[in-house]
Length: 199
Image (cartoon, rainbow, N blue to C red; front, side, top):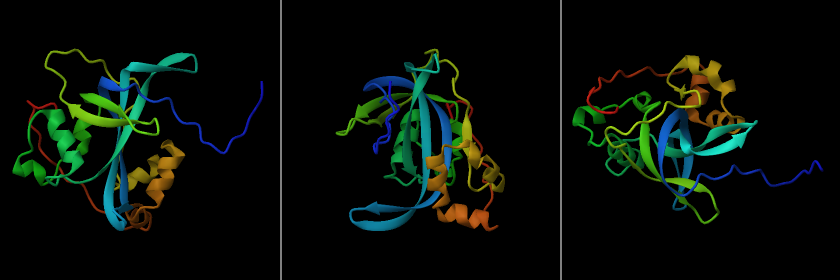
């Protein structure tokens, strides 16, 4: 046996390509990030969603645990936004004008969806299509603890240490984090829901 150092980071085992039932286990507000798109830099509010995949486990610490997959989105419900496309497909209904004024993502935490996982050219698994789970299909509860990290809540700073270090570092680069750390912050928006929808 050898303890071998390498310049390459150990990549997680990818989620198997194809359709899966997935459960949203984490919603992380990444704040306002600088994004490069088509050679231009711009500031966008970003959020990271993470799902566990119960039917694709990995052996870890002598226990079978669901693999996880994440996707970053621009925090927008604009007509062309990928977040809006995925949320509307997930809930099986388009947003009303009132809902488009402000939809609290906490509503999707712990909720299941169907997900098509695709593999990119470098062998990483990516979230492809998201759809609603068929009515009547039994879905187990989440294995992992649920995480909700909201940079509009000053108390969130006490939760930073519980996040993976690479996510902490990303958040700390954001304008939103710097303003919160320096004592400037926003508030919450309460949005009423429709109990007949999954969220």
